[in-house]
Image (cartoon, rainbow, N blue to C red; front, side, top):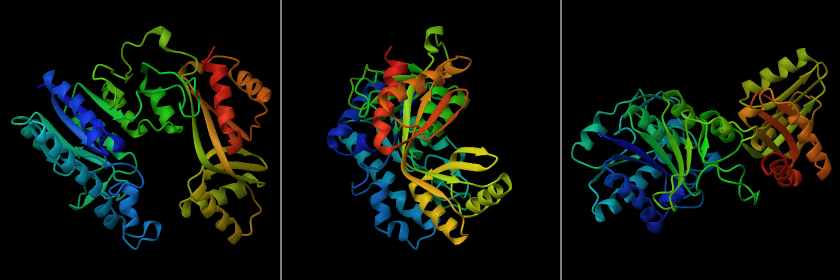
Length: 398
């Protein structure tokens, strides 16, 4: 049995026109002899009636009185509605299809409601369905806890559902359909000269996703990488023979290993600067952890600690520092810009080239850090578009 998994995001199932575009890809796969497992997200994005944020607003949003388990009861509904609506359209158009929720399809998770981890995917029901159906439509983003309650996998969880289901079914590949034609060297809304990447390694696309590229969830890439599962990032609206970006670790040519793969960015950050010694820093990090403040992009020196948080966690941190009367400097509305590429390892001159390019355009660097495959810089929100375009021109347009 040849099996393929296709995942369609919120914009791909938001209306009849979008779903008809998705059906073209399903039909093509069926005609090629595949049994197709379809994983769908909730219909539309923020503002749409059944999008996750819209459902949360029905129960008070951040002011809700519901427990995480109870919240999962309502946010999981969006994917279930999407599954039923899409399956109805498939049947109306002659597809031999059947619908399943995440629990129906065998997704078993731990009890970490709102951000559950999948422990097992029992494929019996899906495989049984393939005996009499060509297409199985599965609600993404959800599973069943050890206690028998519905759970959700966290934001972007439908990508992870698709990758996990593909691995469990021993599928030939998983296709992630979205509203762009594949992975780009930068966000094309920011960089007009951003170009398409035909092939990327798992590490490259995972790093791009971790650093802000919103094409795919990094956890889904990690699942595919562990199983060496071929993955494609494609556009729902492209022709069926447009295969998008292939994510793989197989048959990558020497030329593939470019110095820099792309430029990514994360907005809405707050930089926090403390004049403290290491002993004092240890206590501060402990207090932040106890209050569930997540920190990132950390620089520690003998008399200073600098790190970043999300805008929301920055507000929580500010209250904590006021409570303990700790002097601190906040720089709000910051953006982390990342240069990503496996070819930077052992390549001299990357930092020099970055600093020179940004200096020429007058972009102030607030903070830097680096790893084997990534160089991070922090800039103000006013400068981030110029920074992204400057770095793209310096590293990817020559």
